[in-house]
Image 1 (cartoon, one colour):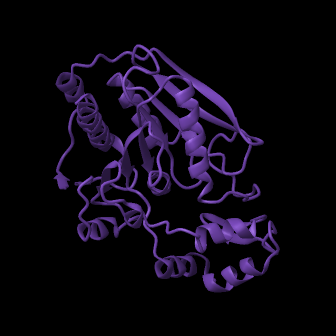
Image 2 (cartoon, rainbow, N blue to C red):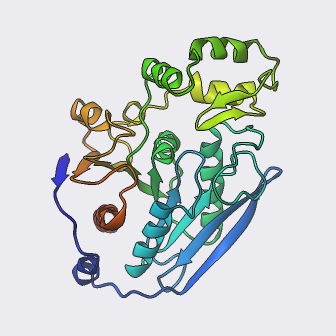
Length: 306
């Protein structure tokens, strides 16, 4: 199913429509362990308890963090609707990481590490008594959520993918050359020549980081020669999780997402194009995301009750 939303809905509509009361019971940082790394997340409990109703697990985008505008805004708006949420910080290989990734720090992270960390947080939530979780990911986080959701835990009700990442090796190579004036295939060859767990032999242009001092060869390959596609539309599963995908009409980061989704038809996937929104759904466009989340909760819990 495909939708086209024009204009912006007022947040108060949600409270009137769903009869919810805006009450933030608690907001706190949670820290847990995953192997040797500490993971942290912001937990907002806006209902009577953490296991009252479905909880939204939010995943940020590339080298970002859970305090970035779109994630913080979504947590605030969800709290206004008495919906609990957990906004996680992917570790990116750094113990108890906060804030945007520092490009001068060693890059030991891989795209696929997020799947393990999402799973770790799902297990923690289950340990708190939460048995209904709706996943939501932005940009690369959307692609990572979609990859995790190919084999989700039984507690996962569905997923909302916000401007999720697309990926094409030819496009990536062209974009890399335009950004850094270097041939990506040459660097992929260098990475493949390194020893297991080895580092790139010199400072390397990596993702958004110009001349990153230390980049693991496995990290470079994970993002530029991945073992599994990073293209979100290719990760969708017919008859799988209930999935809502939102794209902004003014998005210049994942410009080909609407075109790709127009070519696919899945019975469990709803595509919404939001007129005027950019990649980050700034300003009041976050309301459209929250509306999609609330609609998902309403439809999924009805199915669950039946």
